[in-house]
Length: 203
Ligand code: GRF
Image 1 (cartoon, rainbow, N blue to C red):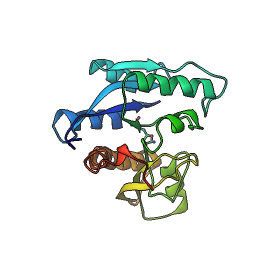
Image 2: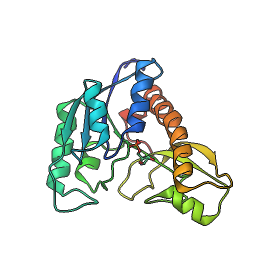
Image 3: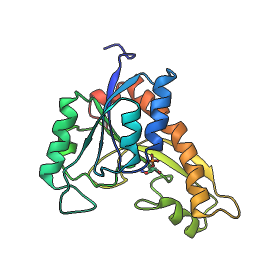
Image 4: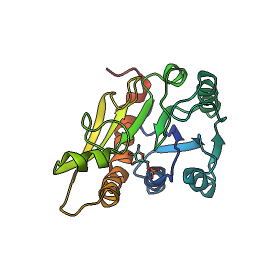
């Protein structure tokens, strides 16, 4: 297959969608040769859905289950079916706040990317920027990695370093990390596409 073919990205998010917006900008400016047929959220009030509608991209909202941090297997299966229906090649988690337990990983093995706001393996889990501040380190960053069953632990594809400056609050530091995320995520997605990494299981 020609490496410049438009790979179809399915984007999943629960929040305001600034990474999704950066990905859209990269597509619009020709830096990312991909298309986004669908954006899916677990929250009907998520900003990412509003951004998708403005960009005339189809949206879907997951059925509400009983749990807050993960999806029941039937709902995760519905999510996988929705992505298949839109012929998605590569799944991009952009602030998706549910742990994926199985059906989606089975449907898209080695084809799910995530961005995390730290230099993994440091500071896995929630509010990684606060963890970095509390640890007193002078540098943190962001990481794009493949998604595997263990949270924030899949193989790393790219990282950008971000300094922690005197007087940083959690909000200021998170904003600086997000600026880096917006550069890193589209670049890494393009590199995955160029290297055709989404077509086979990586190691
Ligand atoms: C980002 O900080 C990302 O690292 C984390 O969730 C946040 C999503 O932000 N996984 P946004 O919705 O893309 O603005």
